[in-house]
Image (cartoon, rainbow, N blue to C red; front, side):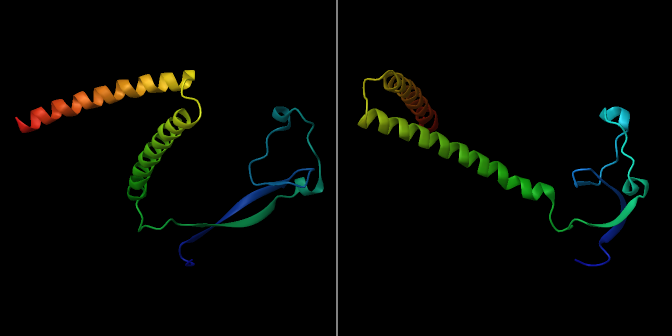
Length: 128
């Protein structure tokens, strides 16, 4: 990292009785419902320097996000294929006459019939 791209900032740090350190603003005792803690560390504000770096200008957020949609669609497609394949294997090898398999068979028949009709109509429209 280059020294020019870093910014120094002072942050107020408070510590809790548990030993945890927070860089957030302290809440008023009336909002917490707790009595205010009076501690020597609370009386003094401890200052720490925090360095923030500027983001790189070479990468645009739109360019990075474009591929994630394609990956999401591919993952959805793979999930559907695995689900249908698993159900087919179950119905073929394990229990052909279960309620799940009869419903699955009816749904497959319905969708295959509709897809076949769509493809025939598309074929007639393209080659006519």
